[in-house]
Amino acid sequence: MIDDENWSLNKDKDMIKFYKNPNVEEGMLIKRLTTVNAPIEDAASSLFSYEFIKKIMDKIEDIHTIEDLGEDIEIGYQKLKGNMLVSSRDFCFCKCRFDLKNGDICIMQASTEHDSVSETTK
Image (cartoon, rainbow, N blue to C red; front, side):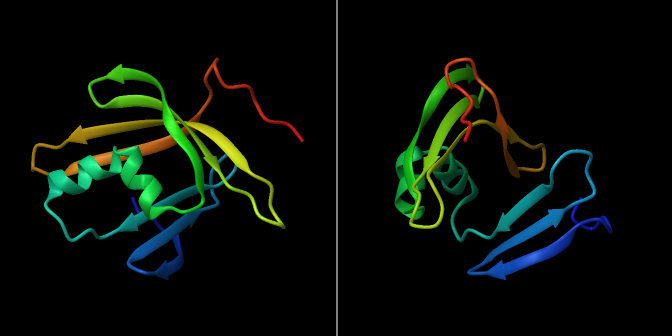
């Protein structure tokens, strides 16, 4: 998918590559890729651990599961700390894990809405 001509590398820093694709109907599609030097199952489990995510991302004020849909699919909530220039931001997301036939693990996360979290307006 990144090989598609619509994707462009926006940032490459600290082993994280950030791509963007402005050619979508609404908003902008983004993708982050990173390399983790750990056994695949350990890396995948860490990405589903909110305690681990809080340790590596100091801007997270709150992150928790809103609804566990089973089979490695969940709806979550995340709030990012603001600073002097930007106010705090919060959003709901759906996170899924898929074990592929070749032994790879795919984890996807996308913003979503949930009845238990009201939309923030300014």
